[in-house]
Length: 431
Image 1 (cartoon, rainbow, N blue to C red):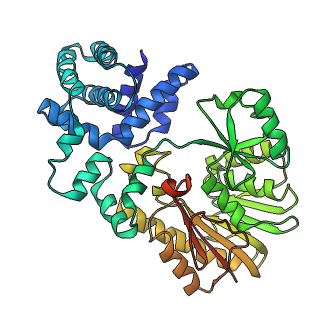
Image 2 (spheres, rainbow, N blue to C red):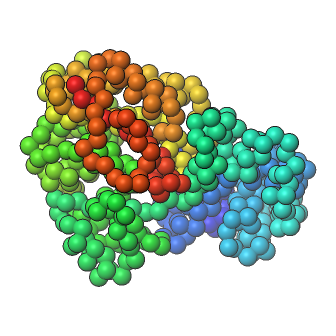
């Protein structure tokens, strides 16, 4: 199979369940780094701009995409993505994609070739201007569900910049493990390995890696010197402000990004308990904590049911709650197409149950940091109000950053287009 044929097969599988990662992993594990990166760009990019690509293909072909065979439909999508967004020479993209179609569906190769030639000359920006409704124009051009655009227009004045930020490929950030290294020592290792990087502007434990680098080739990968993490995710642990010797609970902790961040920030000297309800994800949590090199009590627990954890015990609790994950769409573009209002409302109830249960576990005078990687008010501000209604008291953040995020009262939001982070909401409470 050539790389384009693999990309099309991944997209055919994606259509069945709206999941990308498992299909990408299973069909690319035999590829070298260069080819795997190319397939990742083709599949992620095509899913990111799916609405725009389908609009363009239908205009160019005069046929509905839904009526095409899956392999043909997705071959046209990856072809349009190459023509509109990649630096692949147009006729090379066309010929290679047509060859991929011939192997699977020879009869359709002529059709793909004919539509491809029209797409080479297709001006999608001009065509989109003919859509009468402004929201629908924006939703098509930037390729989002129309209901999402309507919602965020009501929530955020700079919603178009937000949409554009969610469409950008996110940078690769590493968060160092202070148990095993320091920012200064890790920077020297990167320099020695000739890996281009820059320190994060306001988080000294983080580095942005420039260009495409194979993760396993970065010094310290096997030794647990770093963890791949977005700055917004690390901020959950930073804003919690954990201290050595404190009793700290991380709820919904798997796969361990925030647990290991707490371990790093306390240099392994806190009494950390990490819990999750998913046994498979707890295995990953254990692996990551073991690699990070600190002691941590790890339990499979659902605190909304009967729990073995003692009431009024923990000095600090981090509740990075399960959510709709609309804030991480730039990392997971399939999130544009697998969300719904029902999911948001369902998650809100789970989050409220977790807040109610966490309240009992927090020591009087202790602190709870609630966070979600969501842009939705139901999962952010509305839940912060709910937390106060059930007894939590708003607290001030111990750590503050100048010109970072949007802060109000005991809450804070960060955004991809403003802060170069995933979209996260944070709220801090005491008891």
